[in-house]
Amino acid sequence: MSFTSMSQFRRNQRGGVVVLFALMMPVLMGLSAVAVEYAGLAKRRAELQRAADAASIAGVNQFKLANADDAGAVRIATATAQAQARNNGGATPQVTAAVIGNRTGVQVSVSESVALSMGKLINMPTVDVAVRSTAKLAGTTRLCLLALDPLAAGAFHMESGARVTATDCSLYSNSLSAAGIQGESLAVATALSACSAGGYAGSGANFTPPPATGCPALRDPLADREAPPVEPCLILPLILNPVAALLAPDDKRYGVNVVSTRTTLRPGTYCGGLHITKGGNVTLEPGVYVMKDGPLVVDKHATLTGSNVGFYFTGLTTGLLFDQKSTISLTAPKDGPMSGLLLQEDRTPLSSLGGLVGSVLSLLPLDGKGKAKAPPGGTLLSREYRIISDNARTLLGTIYLPQGRLIIDASKPVADQSAYTVIVARMINLYDGPNLMLNAQYGATDVPVPKGVGPSSADTQLTQ
Image 1 (cartoon, one colour):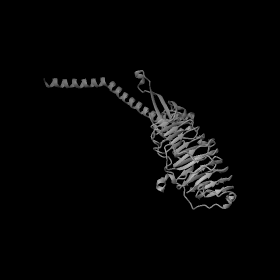
Image 2 (image 1 turned 90 degrees about the horizontal axis):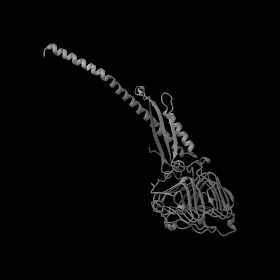
Image 3 (image 1 turned 90 degrees about the vertical axis):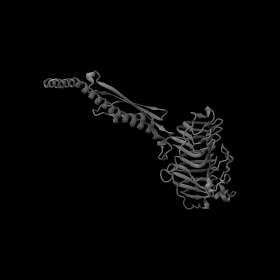
Image 4 (image 1 turned 45 degrees about the horizontal axis):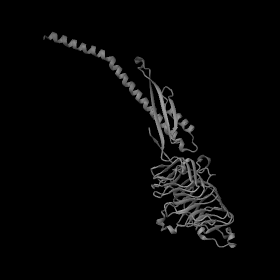
């Protein structure tokens, strides 16, 4: 081939490339536009998803607050999504929110018609983008009763005509026993939910709703609470027990410090315990009352009242007895070392104090009720805290007995006039016919709810 022919071939080849490039240019530009469009859609979808996630979390977190309702949760979720999903042009996406799972979750859907810059060319001016997010409260919501014993049968036990009413909060047992929760005879527990780390024993008539089983054991939510200081012993004047000279001597097992008149007591350490009896009428000044090596007993038509007071129990022979013919009205402190705690027990294991089952105080009620029944699972080394009073209608605050057995065998309602009552104890046993009311009106009082129980006992998790 001549030089001239080679030159003509090269010119023709270059021309073909130019023509091919010209023909491919629209295609390349279209692909580039599609890539840019896709990236924009992906970016916008991610923005909507973040807005939906934030909204579902904000909505479900409302149920950790006092007196939250469905409408409030939906309103917060919707407003959060709309605020975070608003685009640069100011348009507001469509948002729907709903409460699910009996106030344990909030589901949020966000949708938007996104304009396509190349949409007119393909007769598709917009594309609908939709996302959804669900946030749930993990664990127990509004926890108001927790039995801590990890093994005992009947860690939470009811029998006879006993009742627990906790319609706005949840009941929980950490016991791995097949009967970690027990209901017998005509006993009834009505709650927002009930859960056992092991199983439960009883008929469908004993529980509304029936307890869930195989639940993960909860960490003691109050394990980090420090004990209040134990100060030097108070000495009460003998004049506070004028009846002693007229009747037989008082049994010091029921409390070394005896009051049988009308008086006001101040906070401090009551070594040997405190016994209010024989018609005594005691008003407590606000503060912490330490029962050291002795019980708190109220019996024989005596009355005990106090606002913003807390009781701390320490020693082998401490405990509590509110006997049948007593009147009790108590609210927990608003601040200080026992803020929100009405009763608190030394969590030191009794065995480390040299305790044997027979060395722990078990008082015979002087009003004639008789000793408490043994624990459902047999003998147990624990302090006894027993409420038999037919007039203990205000017990506002948290009862925390990590080594103790709470026994309620009154025949009248207990704690029903309290804005809220939370119980965390090793064992909780109800006999006879009390109606233990565990209200959850947290916003109706200025007594704080300790962190980990009440309305703040659940963690928030995104599940979708």
